[in-house]
Image 1 (cartoon, rainbow, N blue to C red):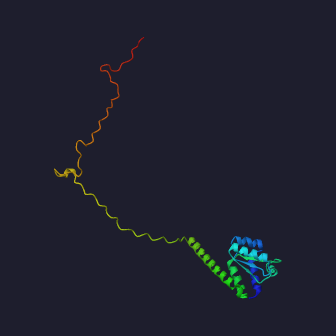
Image 2: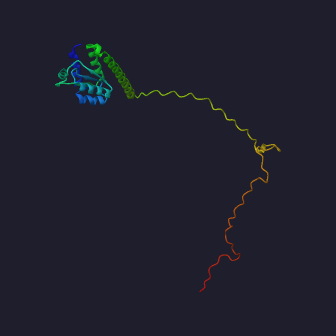
Image 3: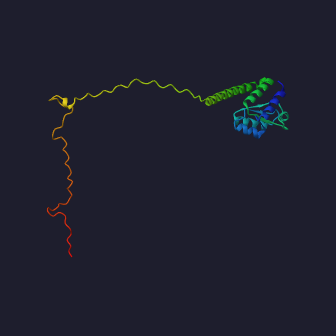
Length: 214
């Protein structure tokens, strides 16, 4: 694999807005969990290496030291020198690591396989999301669950025995309910007297007018 093709792919990622260049942009995309792989120049300082490792831990992504110096990365990306970059697109990261694995299988093959697995999962999620949106546009919804099987008819309640009408009851037959004795029967309430609190009226007097005392 030609080294120039790898640098060309990095330049393409930068023009497409899929590459962060420099420590501050790389830290920002890593902490936002948008970085897919961090790339460190071969001659980067030890402090830069520790920061790159810290960024990868914060963003839960891969980081690799690539076989390019800071000057080579800078020329490919239109800068004077570049020590650290971050690829934010999983497809571009997969293509880049496959090219690095072809260049040096012993060092980059494992990372390339891990990134290929992530790329497949991301593609499956995109397909599922696209199919879901297509179904929504067509008005399709998830099929409703079949209705539960109806239970059998409820058990009929035992009806009380029908009572014979009073007129058809034979003479001397005992009623269904025993009648209480006269002593235990409730006494009827006396009707209230509407004139209980009225004043008696003298007979023969009737209404009279107040006599004039003048």
